[in-house]
Image (cartoon, rainbow over all chains, first blue to last red; front, top):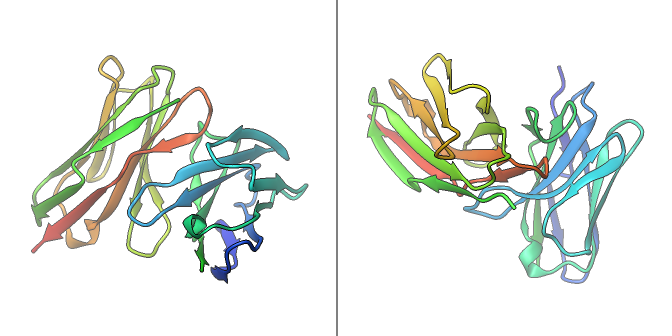
Length: 113
Length: 111
């Protein structure tokens, strides 16, 4: 029984660059949410997608964008990286969306230098 | 939007004792309240959740209570073990259908 998978595991980028993070949800789950977790803090909501449509967006700048594919996998893109974007980016999978159980992937550790 | 406060930020208990972590939320429309355990360097793991139509839920040594009137919910861990040591996060889902997390409680279970 495969859980939520994310790639890559770690990533080092330079300020101003762009990055794409990938997530595959649990089989049968149709909703993917993205969170940013800065060291020592709780996860902060970035996006939620359900059936390929954006269902929610957190308080993040337009440099952050995402999409969901027909197979329910998802990508998170961050443009013009800033040092403050360094964090653990978590993907969460759920059957139908935020008011149901969300299961997290292992995350992608992004370091911006 | 939803705001979730969590206390205490750190909690140290002796093995076998109970631990209680408390959270308050602001959005009266919130109706789903999960708790996550996160060990160092690992993903948050869903350990228990409760919905607003239920006042209490128990799963072995873990229980969660919800007081909708006061807008607070609590995690209770009984007979704590060293493997319970981790950071625990409460969360709430409000009208925006997104999870808003608390700031976390670092629980340390000492022998």
